[in-house]
Length: 221
Ligand code: CA
Image 1: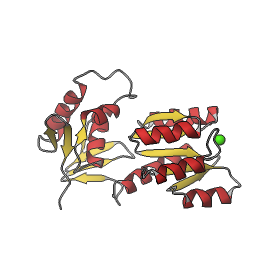
Image 2: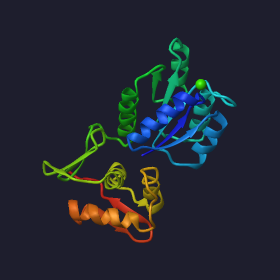
Image 3: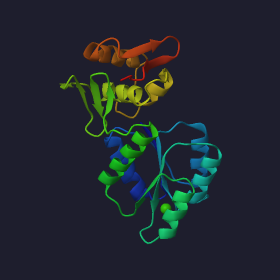
């Protein structure tokens, strides 16, 4: 999952970035509003964490401009403690949630999981497909009630595919989700993770879409 963090405070930005990386998010951290609008226009993020008090372009303007551009990515705004106006204006301008500074990182993680869940149209906390259950909060996967042992990268690939079931995920997009999880990504790494996932979870779950990437079919119940 890719997060765009827009926060001009060095200490806070660094803390949030490090925390999110430990939660296996791929984090891009920008420190001004103009850079944020540019990035949102060009890149695909799963969620945006947006401070309102920013240099060059205030967060509220970033929000208005990106919504005008038709960008529907969920946005959580960070507001100052005493500013009810900020919160109201932010939500009116298209923010999906807010956190008041100072906040606990665990609360940020939980709110981001909820936003990603809602944006993928999922009401439940876990993602299900047939007898497979993936829990984004605990980073665990169960098949027919049995815990399946997956590496962090196997989990990251599977989560991306299951969150986007019914859509073909390009190799580039899936590989982006692997960068930032430590070592370099080798050219055939993605195939290797998919191979491992098929061995562990059965060969039918992940389909190869030749020349494009991979997909998990939308679950039918
Ligand atoms: Ca600020």
